[in-house]
Amino acid sequence: MPTPSSCLPPSLELFADFLRFPSISTQSERDADTRACAEWLVRLFQATGLEARIEETGGHPCVVASSSRDPQLRTVLIYGHYDVQPPDPVEEWESPPFEPTVRGGRMFARGATDNKGQILAHILGVAETLREKGRLPVNVVFLVEGEEEIGSPNLCGVLERLKGELAADIAVISDTGMVADGFPTLTFSLRGIAALEFKTLGPACDLHSGTFGGAVANPLTAAARLVASLHDEAGAVAVEGFYDAVRPLAAWEKEAAAGLPVSDEDFRKVAGVNALAGEPGYSAIERVGARPTAEVNGLSGGYQGEGTKTVLPSSATVKLTFRLVPDQDPETILQQVIAHLEKHCPPGIRLEMLPGHHGAPYVTDPHSPFGRAASRALERVFGQPPALLREGGSIPILGDFQRILGLDALLLGLAWPDNHAHSPNENFPLENLELGRKLNQAVLEEIAALPQ
Ligand code: BES
Ligand code: MN
Image 1 (cartoon, rainbow, N blue to C red):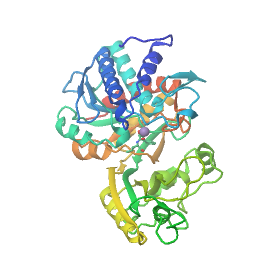
Image 2: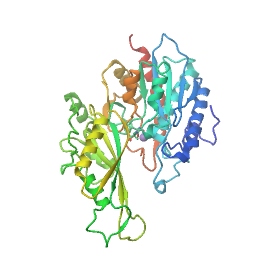
Image 3: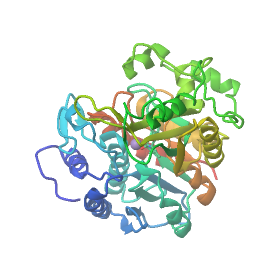
Image 4: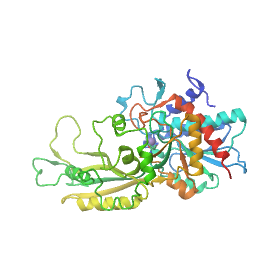
């Protein structure tokens, strides 16, 4: 294994070394760090006893690692990502985001939960099984990518190209959440996503707001009106056709959701708000797991500096993402949204559309033989049967795993609701590194034991 560098126990050392790479996929000035992180992973896999290499993608590289293949055994694809979100706002971190620090039994650093701690748990599990038994109960192929947080723009090409090498019976992924701290969870659905940026364009240059204001449309006002037009008063999305393809919740799902150990009040507290909002008629857990949304992620334009500036800005920018549920199609949704914005665009304003990345929603049957094997593994490790959960986040490549590789995924998340993924002070409970390692061993055994 790569040489540890301070005085933590060996697996925590490795964890800290992994976290020191600022592998921020969206920032090109971090490209060298991102690649160095991938190379470090290759060395870690090799030290574990797997064959490993960098696979170029045209963007950030992937890491592919596999055990020797025994044709008698099932094959499991273990997927994860080594790229992370930007740490901003950096001043809100209690310890620097790329100087991993242990406090109160948790490791704090950007990427600790999402996804370095979770993928490392699988690597540690495989390493320990190989050390103790000399062999794994299944063939294993790891695919660890560097572009998940930017929508996996180059991964489809890799799946097509390496179809043979990545052929497997099932995918195992820990990049999701646990319904409550310490509560084992099998996630069987994730939302899809479609991104769209648009600009409202007014006058050719910024104008004096006294000389021109009142007679010239203001692009920021137009942007705000367009953003507001995306929802109705009650909180439902107001884009025509948006809900047409939405599959309603099955009766068993409603029941399962009602039985989960999180109330709306728990949810409100974790979010840190004084009241919840959203579409009427659904609990918070149903809204984020099973209902689609329109979110504004950024709105900018005009003067942002100190004091006032009487300006009528020439343009404004809005960044939107839509979370989608089965059977919404991202491309159709983007067309509907573009049509909606064009229809509501006020006179005197031109629109420029910049459609972004997208990924399909994902759903599978948690009661399939593989799903039940995963539930048994979770129960063995956590001492109680798992919650069956639909989650609101997205792993954009999952739809392509189904389409290109014919693979379903067992989503065995290790992230607690308060682990601050994507937020300041992201952290990962040290016990979850340990439990995740055991979970890897248990799930591979349960998959191996399934009847042919
Ligand atoms: N680990 C998350 C996905 C996730 C989050 C699953 C919460 C379940 C619950 C993943 O790393 C992620 O953040 N994905 C992005 C994808 C996007 C940038 C295309 C997301 O969901 O915002
Ligand atoms: Mn993420």
